[in-house]
Length: 281
Image 1 (spheres, rainbow, N blue to C red):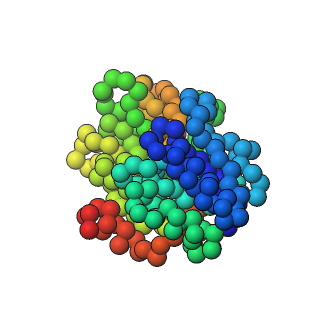
Image 2 (spheres, rainbow, N blue to C red; image 1 turned 90 degrees about the vertical axis):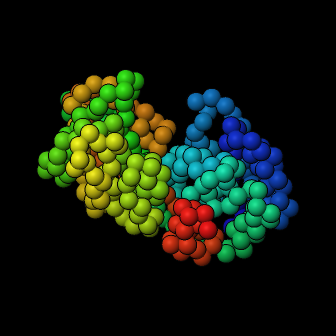
Image 3 (cartoon, helix red, strand yellow; image 1 turned 45 degrees about the vertical axis):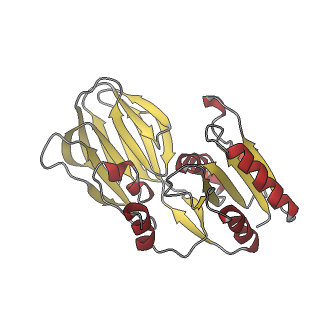
């Protein structure tokens, strides 16, 4: 690789300085490195595909998992490989920690030399319908969440799979997660951990108000529809885009036709990574 694009999160300490270090390092080795980042404000938080040069071979994000996820969603149509430098404490998706001595420069050397693999990750497409009319659609790499808007009250939801009624849930919310998102909110809510290379959809109720409320794992080809039976809820895509929903609204979730492409540097098995992240070994 010789053409790179940097995205740095202005709300993370040290990202601006790290962007300068990486840009200088890549340029000194004959690479081209464009930089995006530093703007603040909701309207400038996203990266437009048109901002990224056509010949970009790799996008490097500086921040945390959220920065990488946002870039993956914004640029999914471009299918540009992404890799993240973790500027915080914990990251499941970001492979390199800025505090680890020499890790960033080793990452850059490996990218330049082509010593890496590409890993495709499944994404979800969610669409909110009101009286049969589409009002909002978006993509998610981790999960689509149904949550309360304000008041701490129980949400009631009717779930259908491939048009067939499944059950009704009374819960504090609902998570529809990808395998990548299985170690995020889904894990905190008691859902299963799934290998990121798998292709399936996980349905996990949040604090279900019934003894039988458990996670269910569906095929990636299944279509999940959730009809709201009450007021004051939101559909949230990867903790970013939030869509207010009313009684009778339907959230339809399917596997996206596009996938995120992540750069994998190290030959670390899923079990090794899981042990390292969860057990601290």
